[in-house]
Amino acid sequence: MFRDAERNNTPSDEIVWTGTMNAGDVMHIPRGFWHAATRVGRGGGHSTHVTFGFAKRTAVSWLTWLADWSRREEAFRHDLDRWGSPDEWRAQQHGLATAACRLIDDRDPAEFLRRREQEAPPGRHIPFLDFFGPLEVVACVSEFPPVITQDGEAVIVVAAGKKLTFAAQALPGLRLLLSGFPVRLDEAARQVGAEVEALAKILVEEELCASVTPELFSGYTGLATSAGS
Image: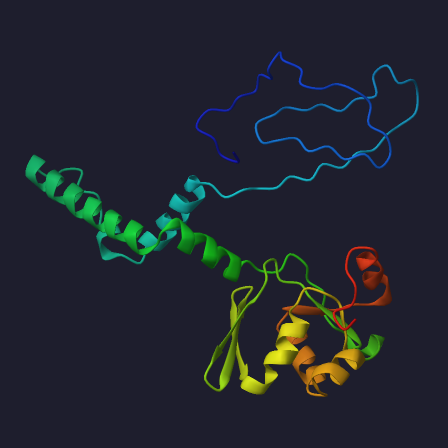
């Protein structure tokens, strides 16, 4: 864990696997396992490897989140009564325990994960500068899929800490633009109507989508086709 109760700096003597990885090889190392990469015994030269870590959320993450929410509760904002009588200590402890239980009941782990997905800001900041050319291809860049809901004559989009409201007729265009696939606006206009271009500009300005240049588009090669295809 990023902050642990007691750090373990001693690797196990047990070796699960040892061997040589070649160009293009990928290895999954489960949580809790040590690894070391070296060229010892492989002669001269150099090698490069890249390690991707996936940070999972734990109950500690949830409790840390609850601590932030506790600042909104008056019970947690009072000074701890260090010099009070035993009866006063017990009364304060009982009040804090009651408030803590209420906080836990109101904001369970599922609520923590849901809010985290909706509030996480985009990891990439790609501003659109129109002097490089018109907006032609866009892609959603939020860390998690945006939540799109229809409420009567309105469509509400929640993502990256933002809540945007659109007219109901924008729903097909929003679903296309926020699909996570690169979207060619000329193709999208033929599918869902010309207003998709105006929607794309709004989503780019709000940084839920980004303009995909030819160079950025090449990063999707072999991974995802255009949403319009």
